[in-house]
Image 1 (cartoon, rainbow, N blue to C red):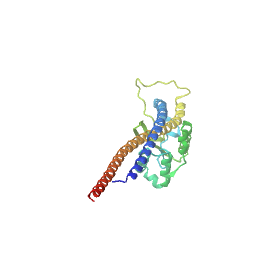
Image 2 (cartoon, rainbow, N blue to C red):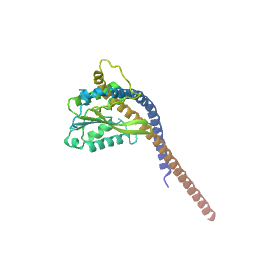
Image 3 (cartoon, rainbow, N blue to C red):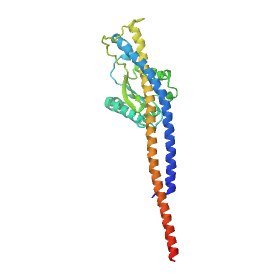
Image 4 (cartoon, rainbow, N blue to C red):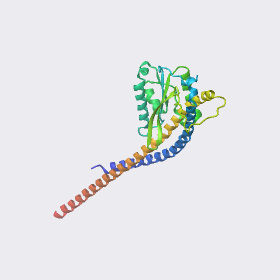
Length: 293
């Protein structure tokens, strides 16, 4: 039977851990609310922008925008969106695993030739790919300290400049899409070249826009904005997913600590009973020996 002092120390340690996990769950729940509000507010705007581009898709066929020009993917950039901190279950491991599967499946040749680059948004992905000697461009770990469209746009603008300059022929983004606190869906999207929207068939829901100055000029203006919104939405999705994953992980950790505490308290009580029984046996035996003597 375990030593009583040993079990008491373990009970104190697990109780302390349980208090920490409870506090972390509450903090993550508060942050999740703010992060969820941000992505929910952005989605209608992003979807409407996509719808407008879809309605104007005829103009894309003759567009000279460099952001929609398809090229053979000799040089590829993968944007991996992770978090800065751990304790979020398999959140970071899953996004890195998905990015690695994408590279192995589609871009193993580019990787072998040294023509594959990584932009990591989040310290976990940054550290992972730097340790494995990938060509990691820049450091964006401070983005989450002030997660705004303006700050995210600076990253997107650098990517767009690299694409136009021929540094990359294709850019893909890997991130966790937020569904709810318990569910995050891993998504891989092509950021550049911008995929041409499917032509909208005339239906009751289609919109006949009055365009000024011209359909083509408006499309040329909307394409860069659409690319920026796409990456910003991916980052917001990942940010909300991170807090959802951490809240769920801390909730499970709290429950596990509770189960362990019950087990330890049972062990403590059994050890205590055994000690008392031993003491009583010794007292009775001593008393019997004295009376016999």
